[in-house]
Length: 181
Image (tube, rainbow, N blue to C red; front, side, top):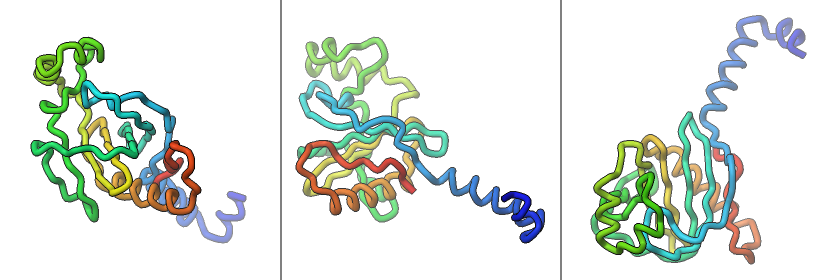
């Protein structure tokens, strides 16, 4: 097959096709794991908000998407971010009680507000960048290992909405897309 491409397209065209494929593959997010049922959102402590988490890989970044059918009350400290065609809210990690390595959920939950402030004061630079999206039927949190990627968030929400519209949705398990392109 490669020989056929070489003769009919020339050596320059075969190389160009390969580079197009490489650049296209960089723009595709892959669902690595999930969706997995979780008993609480790890960055809102303490809580019992059941959710599903999907773990994606996109452009060398790890992205976790948390879905819950519950309405989440957005805090005033969450900054509004215009992200292409969607509106996200950036969570102030100091106000949400992000758990720090070495601090267990039980310790944070048992300390109440004091635990939240203690956990928040020890947030390291490796803390994920957290963003919130609210729909009338569900809430989604995006956790980016590096920085916000609007392209991923926008594409994910478009695919997610599409799969929700074509799938019977009797189960609680959300239709996380395996590929986001």
